Length: 312
Picture (cartoon, rainbow, N blue to C red):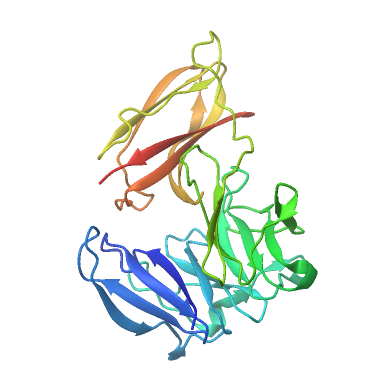
């Protein structure tokens, strides 16, 4: 029997919990009753939809994300049946509740997103502040990884035709069940891909592509986004930037998956030098977990991003 794990703070107690999808299509929750540095997992049973076990297909693989930006964790799920589902949390962030009437198939236009053995991940791949969808799949000429760019908004994603992702102009190699994760593996600011397959091998594909450029702060008259200080930090850090001309400025925090965390600045500013502090809390005022975060400056046509590390 295969298992497809995801880690998240399910009950918002500041400790990492575990959800495991399996080949029979069940999704089991294990709550951490220990500590983050010494987890002790307690089986809390199968995730329900209404009063029944969640049942949308075998080989259940889920991504946990606030899909509609309502401050509550939702599920994006793929199975052997081929569709990708948004399963909306109608409960609270601390006690998620799911219903079959609030489960939706993701689409491109009027067509379902459809592959065989779907394995979804959510990540802002093009660094535009909107969540994109990446689907791993197995089956004939459709075997591989597919990127669905979000051309809608971050809270109401709309997808365009899939783009097949390649490694050195070839399909990603995986003999069966393209299960993968997207993360900044080598902490260079680029999204990398960690790939697993049925024979037990794990391969890391490093992203060699360009990231959003950060202008040189030593050049006179330039827009600049400086490295936060201190970095790593706990609990507060300062972010400094300089604008040349008056502009509508947004300074936004994202996590390592490209998911929105908090807006620090959203206002019209004259040209000048500015400093803003982030205290490691999200939009709802809750402490976020240790890890890599990104802060993004948007000032007119200028877009700059840097990485920072929070250590609790």
